[in-house]
Image (cartoon, rainbow over all chains, first blue to last red; front, side, top):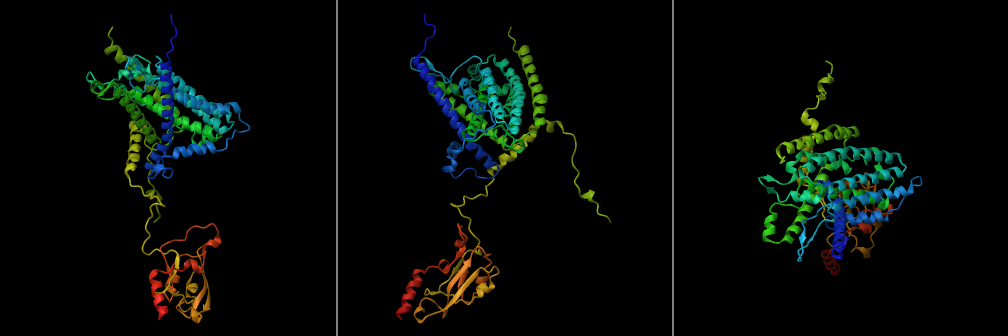
Amino acid sequence: MILLAISLSLILEKVILIAVILGASLGIAMYSTWAERKVAAIMQDRRGPMRAGPFGLFQPLADGLKLFMKEEIIPAVSSKFLFVLGPSIAMLMACMTSAVIPWGPDIPKADGSVISLQVADINIGVLFIFGVVSLGVYGVMIGAWASNNKFSLMSGLRAASQAISYELAMGISLIALVMMTGSLSMREIVDQQHGFWANGYFTWNFFKQPLAFLIFIVCAFAELNRAPFDLAECESELIGGYHTEYSSMKLGFYLFSEYINMFISSVILSSLFFGGYNYPGMDIVAAHVSPLMVSLIGVMVLLGKAICFIIFFMFIRWTIPRFRYDQLMNLGWKSLIPLALFNMLATGGVILYFFNDK
Amino acid sequence: MTYNISKKAKEVDRHPMTFLERIYLPAIAKGLKITLGHMFIKRPTINYPEVKRPFSSTFRGLHVLNRDEEGRERCTACGLCALSCPAEAITMEAAERLPSESHLYREEKYAANYEINMLRCIFCGLCEEACPKDAIYLSQTFAPANYERKGFIYKKDDLLIPMTAEMESKKEKSTQH
């Protein structure tokens, strides 16, 4: 009896998939920095990066090179090990979330088996994402504490309290969604939103749970430490926040992990609420073209949705001023959590009275 | 009558926030509308070294010392430009023309040295107005950057306009005579 059969081709498939996903998310994060500058420039009637290559397209490379060339400073009064650990955790956690995301429909092989475009289809995918995202805050906290700088410490405290406050509302808003889907597996949640229109109703979760989506996206902004909730790096009050003492590539890691996080959370948002790789008319493509084409278009559609979300994130950042600290806490505890609780109870009630088959 | 300042002052609106204002979402939508509108505004920036904004036709830039149609220097070192200059940027030294130099200088007296300090110059164009011989003009270019102060003191060689082919041919004709 074989208890653990390891297929070499499966491992090879996964390794290639992991490499492609990591490469793609790093590349997209890289060009998010470019896009952020361009979006900001367009909104402020400027031109943005123009000099490095056509339309400034080589700007991220120039930035990366600059960060590598900078002097690596570790403050003498800092806790050296933790000082290095901080950005490492931030980067690692940012990259880890992508493991449970289904990037596209399965690609059928000639022998009947399928290539799954998901690194690991674990049945608690949503919980995994939540766990890893919460660990990401440790990167900020540890880095802030290890810097031995009062402004950094303040920023670390803010980041921690912000993460705790908004993760609650985020989790509760997702409970409503999970009650509906009946599954915590990302693959299953996405598959339930197959196509766009079925049985006289939209299949995407956004149309069934708009309030949960609203709460989720506000919390996503807070989790990402992005404006209008970038209290943790708040230049006007805390110099640079948790990365005040950081320089060179360690600073780069912090900034970069923020952009990777933004990409990943855009993908999660589109997977949970906007149908992931599903698109209108995918059955027609499957019937008339080929299943491979369905998968390829699916991946493109998912990336397209994610890019739309990234641009939306940037749009908000350059539109809305930063919240005050008490406003942030008020919004989190007094508005979003009661709203999420209400949404959860309402969803539960509707399921109990209208969709109770037993 | 006393001046009543309270009538001029605008009263601050301190009404309690309405429900729509409190949920903040309409305000966000309004803000997004404004920033979205800016995407379509024509941007005033020009890509400077590649694209240049044209000067006005009356732009006063770097000075040029003119030649006559036979390529001879027009300046007679009368000093009126230096006298008229409010910034005292112009200095010159006069010299008498030798008989053999009549193809170089138009008048019997000429400027042996002629210097304009471009750091002092205010580009007012009074030198151009004062010149009785039409010898000095302000062109359409401006002084380029320099690493040293002395680079901004323009000598006669920097200021004289180069000979054109037309001048050369006329000069040859006049010397053949």
